Length: 82
Image 1: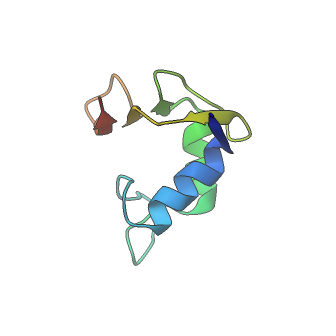
Image 2 (image 1 turned 45 degrees about the vertical axis):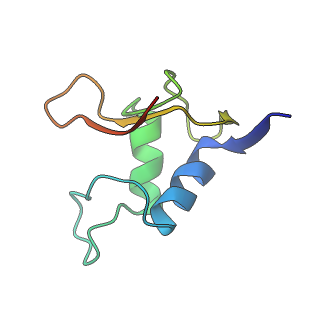
């Protein structure tokens, strides 16, 4: 059975568990991206999940086989690639 979760909720969970995310460029003491920054990254297509660029409210399907931030740029960060 496939599991679903909104893209923004998935990134929040991963960030809160310490699994993902590139450090923020905003002024955060922890260096972790805020909810607003995660939402902005998704809205701009800066996050690729399972070879797709979901918007914040889009559902992502588990298992997650690929998670990439800033694809195609010098700042590209691949977190999961199977």
